[in-house]
Image 1 (cartoon, rainbow, N blue to C red):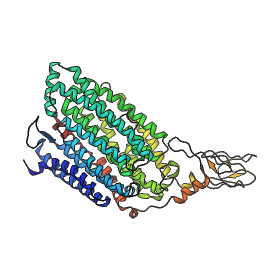
Image 2 (image 1 turned 180 degrees about the vertical axis):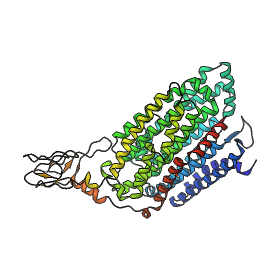
Image 3 (image 1 turned 45 degrees about the vertical axis):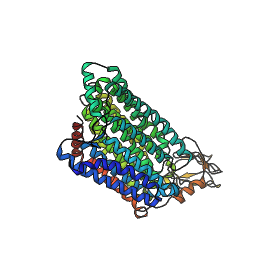
Image 4 (image 1 turned 120 degrees about the vertical axis):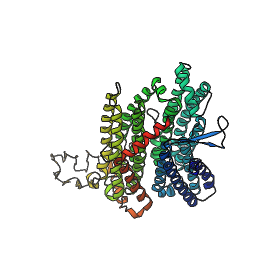
Length: 578
């Protein structure tokens, strides 16, 4: 065995033991260890990938050199090595982009604990990618869940405690169903190693034995992992978990954690049960239907959202729907499209979260739509990054989102019953994506005065939108009558009331401001304060975040402009599953 073939096991062990090491270090040293570990594992994964591609076949690494059932083993192929390398790149960039937020939002005494959770999370993701044992996969699913829960609640606010509790409840429900499915499968086949289960399932399916038990096991595992990856309607925990966590946590949760569960489900379909058996079970039809519903409903929820980060979170519900729709097509092309969308979504959604943080920095720390007006001018790099991420999510050519949507459409062509629903769902979802992402882009690139710089005083004068004098006349916008009312943009009378964009009375209150559906009022002085706290943010002010944004943009362009070699690599990896 070549020495490089030990690297996957060493990567898992390195990330596992770096967790306890960070627990005894202070925050700064723990951060350095965490960054070094992620970088080293990424480099090791590159060497593994370079070793596996020329070989053209996977290899099995037996830990302790004991065969089943006494020993455990991991399996390394092209797709596994590539996903490990890609996950490390995304995690490293997420950690780079959120350095300042971690230092300001997490207590200094608990910062080292944050890196403990990140290292354990990386360990669990690597194990889910490489493991060849179903029960080992379940163990690391639980480690993944606990680590992710810690990343959510580390800010120690009421919102994050509530979000972590919701996440834990839903995740434990999913874990329980997954474990029940594994138990059913073990009772039927007598094996836990994926390759051995596959052989036994094929024999049982050929003989028509234990058909119901196999379908129950498959259904339980599929629903359990669908819950954990936030497939609609099991997404209730997601908006708060992504929306109120610290930046690095939101980016990692949206781009990596749910994708680890989806990759495990793909392995169960292809390497444990066999995709021919999965197709005959009709479980894929259920995933197809809920995937399409998630594409539409996730986008609809995002349109109604008034908070930027929660909008991005609801967008993840729609994007996860895309992935399950591809799996539901029950073809190799559908699986390839889903895996490509996993890559596209991981690169783009983490880009959007980091860019949204930059826009918030330029808007007095606020994520509300009302406050980010013109933020693209105040933080040019974040605005550009958000524009790139939005265009990718909508599906514009040159960007990764366009490629994955194109592959979904191609995978659906020729499918007797699913082609038309897939194409219609793609069209509707793309339009909805354009509505809420382009609405946000227009908002951040609209000068402040066009929305919020309406001023009113007791004399009835208003500027920024139009002017009125004491007689009630208005110029530059619309018409007025004898009562001093103006239409076209809003109304203004002698007392200074205005509506249309927002209402303002003599006390200066406006009803435009709402956050999370709560409905609140802010005074004119509050709006002016937002304008004062909004500030110019330059690239060198936060070099790590700026570097992360630039790398995310480049990664998105690479996925969009160099899709052919990546697609061949994914196809080769799926062929190795057999």
